[in-house]
Amino acid sequence: MQKVKKAIIPAAGLGTRFLPATKAMPKEMLPIVDKPTIQYIVDEAIASGIEDIIIVTGKGKRSIEDHFDNNLELETNLEEKGKLDLLEKVRHSSNVDIHYIRQKEPKGLGHAVWCARKFVGNEPFAVLLGDDIVQSDTPGLKQLMDQYEETHASVIGVQTVPDDETHRYGIIKPATKTGRRYAVDTFVEKPAKGTAPSNLAIMGRYVLTPEIFRFLDKQETGAGGEIQLTDAIQQLNQIQRVFAYDFEGKRYDVGEKLGFITTTIEFALQNEEIRKQLLDFMADKVTEQLGPK
Image (cartoon, rainbow, N blue to C red; front, side):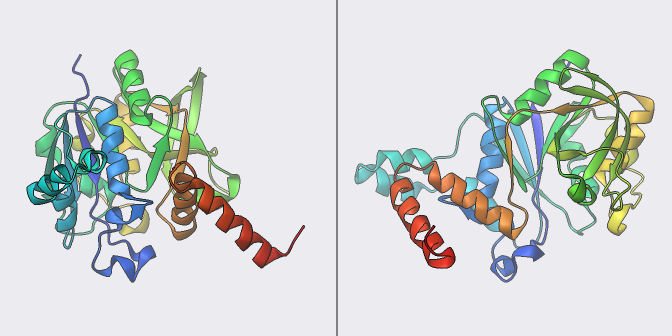
């Protein structure tokens, strides 16, 4: 059995929910405290044992490449000034190779993954979406990779969402359950309100077999007039089993404004350097906005 060594990170979206900030800056480079959102995704891939990453970018995304490149002038300056903690933070990990390809047209997630087909070749691979940051003892992707090694089949990361939010996600209709793993009857992309077959939502982490490209090659459009990865997974499920795994860990949605803000606050509270000052500030603001208890 081939191990999962390659990962695709789609990063070609226009980031319209964050305009005007994303007019000139990629959404993926917006910082959570002091680290761009995409670095959390890359760090998870590295921690999971991925050896090669391809980031699918688009127009105006050059700063992503610059961020993961070496900056010798900056590194020399930090080293000379003895700022070794900062030096460690800005040095690109040597444990993984990062490659780039452009999605020339915004045709959807399925198309973005399809753009990386030659990079993947005939190997199983991972997909990590940048709107979802996962904190867990075992990296979210590694949990799926472990399931792949056990099942030799595609595994999709899912978690439970409230019933009134199912229309925002790809949803699974489970067939049977073994521990935290589900055999799946159907995958549905963004079902209309009140029609979802369950509240188990696809959460931006996938391990897929290369046969998925048989269906992405068709370039068929689905919800929103885009080429949907979920639709291709549903077709893949007809010829070989695809599992869903309810991975452990807390998932943060940084793809919309409120989620981005609350994630920033939570991560800032985990930072001992600023935690106390932030708590004092928040306490004052709560009193100012809501009045004393």
